[in-house]
Image (cartoon, rainbow, N blue to C red; front, side):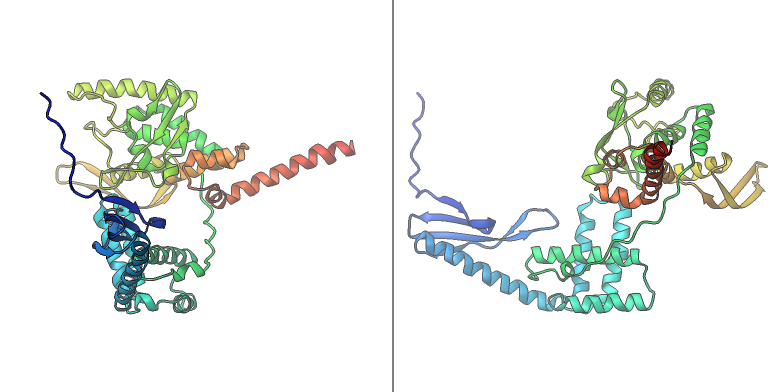
Length: 423
């Protein structure tokens, strides 16, 4: 016989979220006793809301809401008192350590963050975080400009990091507003990017066809055909290659520590179309790679890297770059300032090169953009293909190509309209 459910004799507790996400109000005894708990912003470590200790309130619900406001003000004042003792340098260091502990940032990002954090410590290390004003920040920036200690680009990066740090301080209610919000620093125009000429790109494509297929050669081919970043090419796996629909999906990138990480931004997750020849090349390479791996008793799986090394694993980014510099130098796309020939104890002859000057893998990306813009592709298409966060970023980086397109457009209009008029 089924056991009857017993009715809960405890008073029913009703939960109500306070307005604007300020916390929660729990009804303990209808119209008489409530428990309140304000929210304290998000913990940067867990991205979850911090909560204050519960406080019991006697009275009706309106009184509970009023006490919530009072409790919130008390906590805010307590945080402000803490802020008066906390320096900008100490908080920036704490912020950096917390970001590092998350474990989801690339070593390169952490390294760059460390540079900016150190600068913040140098400039504002002894300034109380609640005493940091627009005037104090502008004064330090003016000194840096006067002494030529930083470039426009470096100052922009420093300001962006300081703004990010103080934004978190506002979330934690250590300060009430971010002084960086009132300071406008124009993003410096990106330096003109180098790109291969049509002749150089065509020659590279021909040279790649002549080479025996390997993971490294495939990486260069994909880079030239799609304009993806080095880490995106080395992190590409077969499950993200759709040969039937002639496209690849960028879902991850291989970092220098050989860890697969998410792309740089949400926009970097994207489908990129492939031309017919690249599709056929990847189809042939997939079959060849399958045979090579089988010879090593390794099964080709969906997670298998497209760009494999000699042992069938992922290709180390630094090793790839060393090989790529040699390849470019041997094919007229770069050169080494120093070359030393020596023989090791076994009698083997070696060539040691240093001081590379020439194109890098990233220039294949700029080549893609320049050729697309030059052929009349719209900026949104170029932005999507490159995985830029905004179209304005694409326009800023490739202003030179857009300007050349504008000149071509002007000449076309002149020939079409005024040239015909003369006739």
